Amino acid sequence: MLRFVISALFISALVAQAQAQVTVVESRPTAQAATISGSVAPDANQQADLFYRLQALQQEVLELRGLVEEQSYELNRLKQQRHDDYMDLDRRLASLSGGVVAGQTRQQGGSSAGSDTSEAAGAGEEAAYKGAYGKLRQRDLAGAAKGFTGYLDLYPKGQYAANSQYWLGEIYLAEGKLEQSKSWFERVIKEFPSDRKAPDAKYKLGTVLFQLGDKAKAKTLLQAVANSSADAARLAKDFLAQNY
Image 1 (tube, helix red, strand yellow):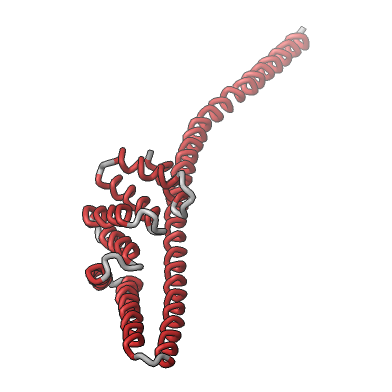
Image 2: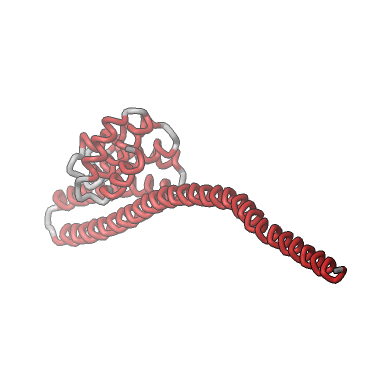
């Protein structure tokens, strides 16, 4: 009898121990679920923060790309301007040399004197423009503005008049003088509509008008440039995409 009682007690103890173990085992998934549930929220927040940062970086890349393209365009334009200036100078020097030789073979001095005077005037116009342009390349904006204005006083319809007006617009834009910049770009478009500087002036005028608050007129000008085959077309398209 005693042996039976001891066996029953032993079996009861084993059952109690087994139930305790089952309880512990069953409680673990709940704790793990709580741990997992607690870790989900921070991961979601981190993903949202990373997504926002990625969007901000993409926007910054677009803006920097636009600046790089604009600087590249300006650099190419300056290179082309320098090339054109040197080519024109070579042509004038060759023409001047030919004029001198022709003058030496003539019997009448009056014709030779007239040719020399004409060539000297052309050389003076070139020197006036190149002097102002040299100041601009040296970042002497005040000296360049004075030089371009002086050139236009002497040669209002000269071969570099459109260039001089355009660079005056750029100078005043760099100085933040928007109204003066606007005036010079408008002059290029009005007085030299077929000049190669006209599309550039139109694009720049559009950006100036945008800064002045006349966004409707600015959009019209920029769309006209964007739809053209001018070098400034891509810049106009980028500006429209970023601001309209």
